[in-house]
Length: 113
Length: 114
Image 1 (cartoon, each protein chain N blue to C red):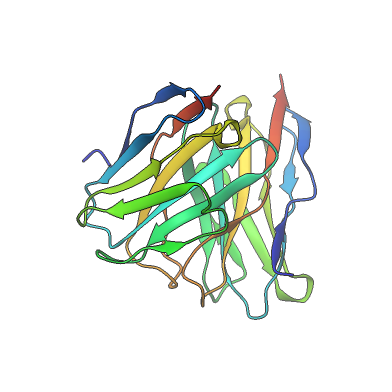
Image 2 (spheres, each protein chain N blue to C red):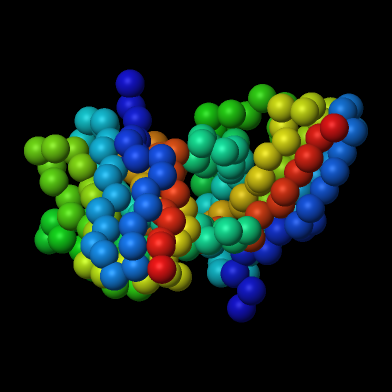
């Protein structure tokens, strides 16, 4: 079945530590890939997206993500987390043929001071 | 430029009541979407409209109807609300569909059905 998997429901890191949030997908062809962030009580904001080309993409707020075709993964990274990064993060996939996004279940990030 | 706006922000309904959630965008986008967000479930697509005059079902359409009133506005109607429809509802818009365009989200409507 086609799906988007975020295996970590909740991650806790200390401020200044590095961060990696995992995302795996199962779709036939390489889809368009997105990471969104949701602060409490807010809508979703796009962090970054991958369409084609360079497999390492840069986003806003110092985030980056790497597309790995062989692993069907699109993991989000940040070298040094700030307390303001505490939020819920969603990976989303556009399979290119269906005209819509499919979201993972989200990863809640807690940042310790 | 307000982006995507939704009304109301909060709503409490009794089982069996009806209501319409309103969404408008001022970015001249072709495509609009309605999602619901439940804890641990991510966002699930209810209905979408790829262009003015068209609507299609998403993953969880049962119990909902939509109207693409014009290019700017896309409403979601609950004809007979049920407790299972307690959720946060998000409207989104994008410049196209099936082509990897970014979706822009509204602030959400928190709906409780008692």
